[in-house]
Length: 114
Image 1 (cartoon, rainbow, N blue to C red):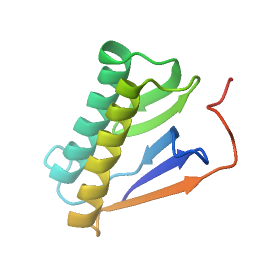
Image 2: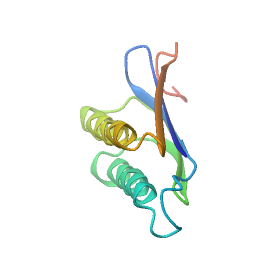
Image 3: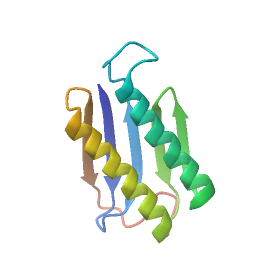
């Protein structure tokens, strides 16, 4: 199962994303659920490095993603992050056997490093 964990500040700003696991929906290389999550994750990283740059620490490999913002996001950055989460939530609703999505709110006022 793929587990997507989103951490938000008390103000609702996304600050951390962790995605782990494999869906197991199909054989390796033919798992469309894993492919969908990988495409969303890779597109988010591309967007946050080229379209709406933001200081962040991230690691992306084999479909796993860990990302932590190091500064407050711009409106464009927030739009990319929210769209990513919308895509993951929709996938979790349509494929609940393979994707679990959760969010928590923490009592930090700004992303790490600030």
